[in-house]
Image (tube, rainbow over all chains, first blue to last red; front, side, top):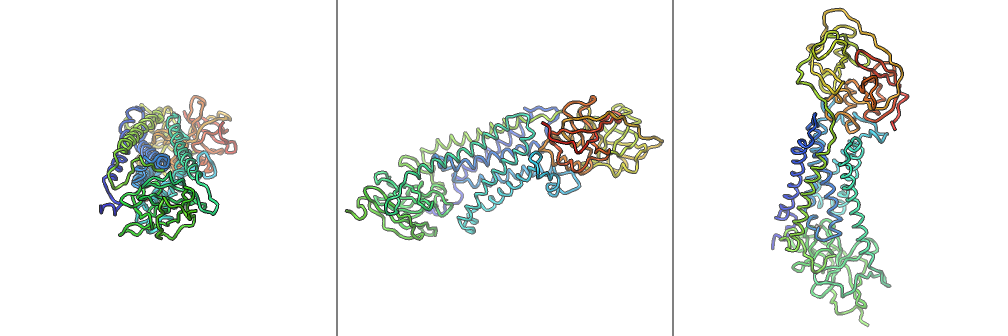
Length: 353
Length: 253
Ligand code: FES
C-alpha cells in the first residue's frame, strides 16, 4: 500500500512506457539510417550528416506530433489515459532527438568556415524580410529552446518550485514549439522537395494534430453545455439517477473552472476537477480505497475535504452541494482548499418541502 | 466521463485486464506507424545527382595563367590527360574558403595548381592543396587569354555556391541549403548560376557582378531561389561567365 503514497516515481508501467517509446524511436532511426540508403541507391549518396539530420529531425517531428495527440485522444476516449501517464519522459526524449538533429546540421552546413559554427548560424542567412529563403533555422532554434526548457523543468521539483499554475502555463510552450517546427519544415526542406511523399505525410500528421484538438474541444464543450443554471445561482450538475457509485460527474462553472461531484457510499461530495499536481481531471478519476484517484498520475484526495492523505499536503477546493427535484446542484463559490464539507446523503433532498 | 464499466488505469497499480489488449494494440500501432513513416520518409529522399570529390582521379597538377576576376581562375596552358589545354578551372581552398589571397600575387602570371577535382557533369573545380604546394609561380611568360562576349541574355535559374554544387555537399543547392551556400560565398567560393535551360551548351555559369567583379553582397538574399535575371554573357576558354545586371533580378514564375 505504501507505494501508493509515492505516486510519481519509477514503476513497472513507466518502464513499459519508456521501453515501447524507446523501441519505436530506435526502430525509426535504424530503418532510416541503415536501411533506406540501400533502397535509395543514389549514384552519389546523400551525405551521411544530412541523412542523419533528416532521420533525427523527422523523428522529432513525429514524436512531438504523437505527444500532442495524446491529450485530445485521452479526452475523447478514456482508454488513452494511460498514454498520458508518462508523457513527460516522451517529451524529454524528443528534446534529445531534436538536439541530435541540430547537432548534425550545425556540424555540417555551418562548419568548415573561418567563423565559429554558432556565429555562422547567426550571420550566414539574414534574409529575414522575405518568405522564400527566410532563415528557417530560426524557427528550429526557437522550437529546440522550448523543448529544452520543457525537458529541464519537467521534473516535479520544478512544478513545486514554480507552483502548478505557472508550471502548467510554461508547458503550453509545447504548442509554440510545434507551430515553430511546422514553420521550420515548411520554409526549409519542403521548399526543395521534388518527391511529394514527405510533404503529404507532413501535412496529414500536422492536420491530424490540429483536428484532434478541435474534436476534443468540441466534445468537451458539448459535455459542459449539458449543464444549466438554476434559478438561485446554483449550477445544475445532473440528475441524481445519473450518479454512479465511486465515480463523478463534471460540471463547468460560470467562471470557467470545473467541479467534480462524486458519489461515495451513497453520499455526494464535490471537489475541484483540477488536480493539484498538474491540473489533471479528477472527475475522470475514480474512488479507490475511499480516495479520489487522479487519472493522470494517481494523486489521491479525500473527497470530503479535498486533502491528500498524510504525509502528502496537496489540497484542492471543495464545493457545497444540494439536491432539488432529483437534480444535483452545486454552489459555484468554491470553499478554501481543504475545507471539510459534510457529504450529502442522496435520499434527503435539500430543504425538503 | 468515466463510466462504471470501464477499467480505470492508475499508473502505479497493475494495468486492469480490460485495458491491456487496448494498450497492446495502441503500442503496436505506434511502433508500426514509426517504422512505416521511417521507410516512407527515408526512401523517398530526392536524388541530388552524380557529383562529388574525385579522389579516384588522384591528385591533379596543371599549369596555366591566373586570372582574378570575378573569382580566382586558372586558364590552363599545360594540362594532363584529364584536364585539357584551354580549360578554365575555378579554384577553391579547403572548406568554405576561396583562394583570393594566394592567387592575387600571381595575377596574369603562369602558375602551377595542384589539388583534387570536384565534378558535377560539365562543372568542375579544383580544390587546391595548402600553401605553395597548391598554387605556386611557374617558369615562363604568358598573358590572360581574351574573352569572347556573347551578348545580353535573360535567364531563369538559381544562384548556388559552386563548390557544394560541384559535389562538396550532397545535396548542395536549394533553399534548405541556403545558409551553407551563403557561408561558402562569404568565404570566397565562386558562385555558379544554374540555368533552367542550357545556354551555349552549358547550364552552369560563373557569376560576376555587372562590372565583372565578384558577386554583390546584396545578391546573398537571392541565393537558392528560383529567379529570373538579365546579364552579359562572356566565354572564357570553355567557361561561361554571367555578368548579372543586379537591377533585373526577380522571382521566376
Ligand atoms: S496526478 Fe498528475 S495531474 Fe493529477
